[in-house]
Image 1 (tube, helix red, strand yellow):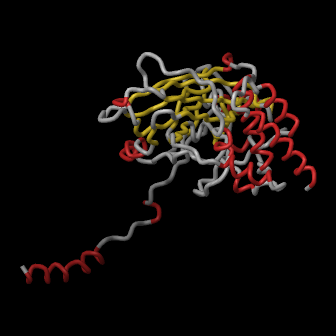
Image 2 (cartoon, helix red, strand yellow; image 1 turned 90 degrees about the horizontal axis):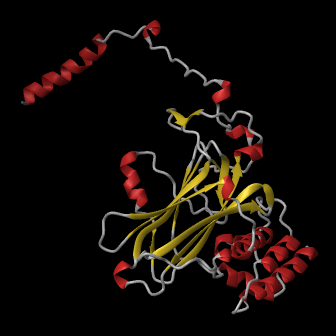
Length: 343
C-alpha cells in the first residue's frame, strides 16, 4: 500500500502537466438573459425613491421592502416591551425622549383594543382592516389584530411558533413596511432551512393581544404605467415568475402550533382595495399612537404627520376609555407638542 501511494504521488504532477491548456476560444460564451418585453415589466425598484431595506442586519425602524423582490413578510408574535412608560417618564420631566427609546410598535401595543373574542373553539381571533394612511393619503395603513381567549382551555395553551406571514401581491403593491422596529424574519435562501425559519415564532399565553401595522404603497400611488394583466419579473435567483392577475393587495396567514401537536394551524385574511374603510374608532387611535411615535423619533417615514393630526385621530378614537389611559395619552401629546415647539 505504501509503495502504491508513493507511486501515485509521483504520477500526479506528471498528469497535471499533461493536461492540455484550454484555448481562449474554447471557453463557453456567457449569454445575457433576454430582457422581458416593456409592456410586461413590473414596477422596478429604481422608479420608487424610498428608504429601502439594505440587508445590513441593523436593528431599527423598519424600512420599505419592494413587493416583487421580497413579497413575503414574516413577523414572530412575542410580548412587547413597554417603551410607552419610558416616554411618559421623560415627558413628565419636561424632556423629549431620545429617538432610540421610542419603539412605535411598543407604543401602539401599550393600549387595549376591542378585538372580537375567539369563536368556534379557536384559541384566538384574527382580524385585518385597511384605511387611507393618515400621514400619506396615497398610501394604505393596514392593521392586524390578534387576541387570545382569557378563559381558553388550558389544553390549547400556550401556542407555540406563533407568527404572522403576509404575502403582498406585486401586481397591486409597489412596496410595504412594518410600522415600528424591524422585526421581520430574514427569509432563508435554501428550501431545507425554511422549516427551521418557520419555527422561529413566539410563545403565546392566555390574555395575549397584539396590534401589527403595515404601511402599504399601492401600485397606482406610484403611477406605474408598466402594470399589465400579466407581469413578468425576475426574482433574486434569476428565475422568471409570472404573476397571476389578482385584485388582492395581500394575503395574511396567522400560523401557530397547539401544545403537543406537530402540525400547525393557520387563520387566513385577505385585503383588496374595495375593503378600504374610514379611519375611525380603535383603528384611528392606533394610527394616532403610531404617528405620535414617528414625530417623537423624528422618523424619516413621518410624511405629513403633525401634532394636530395626532390629536384629531386620538379624539376620534377616544371611545368610552374606562381607565382614562387614552385621555392621558392626549395630555402627553400636548406636552410633547409644546416641548417640540421649543427645539
